[in-house]
Amino acid sequence: MLKEEDTCNTLLSQKLEASLRRISFLEIENEQLKREVHRLSTQNALLRGQDSDRRPTFLLKKTQSLACNVASSQEKQLDQNNNTDENSLASDNSTARTRSPRVPKPPPTPSSFSSSSSHSSNVIKGMKPPPPPPPPPPVSWRSGCVAIKAVRRVPEVLELYRSLTKKEGRSDMKAGSLGTPSPTNSREMIGEIENRSAYVLAIKSDVETQAEFINFLTREVENAAYKDIADVEAFVKWLDEELSYLVDERAVLKHFPRWPEQKADAMREAAVGYRELKNLETEALAFHDDRRQPTAVALKRIQALQDKLERGVQSTERARESTGQRFRDFKVPWQWMLDSGIIAQLKSGSMKLAKEYMNRVVTSVKFDALSDEDELMEQGVRFAYRVHQFIGGFDEECHQAFQEMKKLACD
Image 1 (spheres, rainbow, N blue to C red):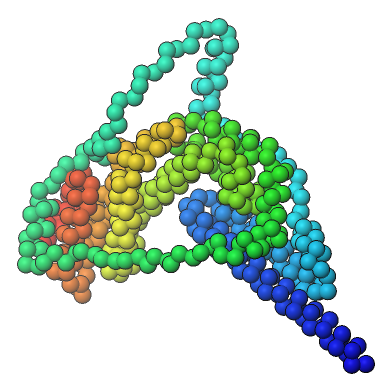
Image 2 (spheres, rainbow, N blue to C red):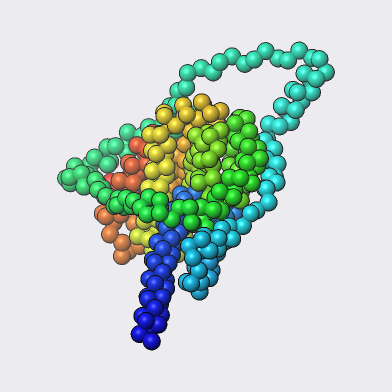
């Protein structure tokens, strides 16, 4: 009897130890999946400027679906503690579904398609093709403010600004620090569970079944050469929608050495950067001063939008030397980064903000008996000076608004 009890206790102890090891293994695997979800969420935040139906939404959906599949497999495995390691490996393999090869949608038609098709038809008919265009001249990023109508410098802005600020120190310096998240070692414990993870098995399945699909996308990216940045936006949207079919774009594509990762990243960077600036332009040009709001609130709204415009322009100006060369190397449109391109439109929006700001200050000084006239005038002059230096001058309407504010300041 004692031997039988010892044998039973030994078996139960072994089963308990096996169960504990299985639970520990599943907890480690679950932690890895949480890290993957966090990585994809970060990727979604970086691409938030694009349409809501783009790749991040699909990636999150697939990650959530994958997490649900792994959770269900974990429940099944916990109920099968008496099985051997070989049976548990077989159950892991069964969770990886073999998907059918993806049939890609055709890429979007570029806006210059009609001209290129007519050129090809002329070649087919035997007509002599036109000579190639001459090489482009050296790039000059700064082409002045030719796109902003009748802008000229106004010395009175500097004089009035200095007269109001000479008694004060320069207290406009802003300091801030961005916290840098501590790096996490995402490779910890991966070697132990890599071959047993349903996530890895799903990636291997995509590598095996989607090779033709990925080779098609590779050719499309390699051959992409657009003149209009709007065509690049459409192509990137199409590309991200197609790649969202994969379980994990990065993990799958690294198994295909021909994948043009640098060109695809350059096209994404151009599309996202242009879309962010266009959204800023739309926001600035559509700005309307709501007279029902208190003056302090309205002025803060204008200042916040001006901050965004300046950050967008300065970021583009800092990056365009290196980024522009990379765009040219990959045949990605870069002309939109010129001073005469969208930057000129953003500065026009800034001019509108300056006019709205000065008009609001004048109105408050004239008709609001409770307002602090000196403080409002100082804020108005500071903002006028700031925009004047940012744009390089004022147009006629903005100059008139400044003259009216100057008249009140000098009375």
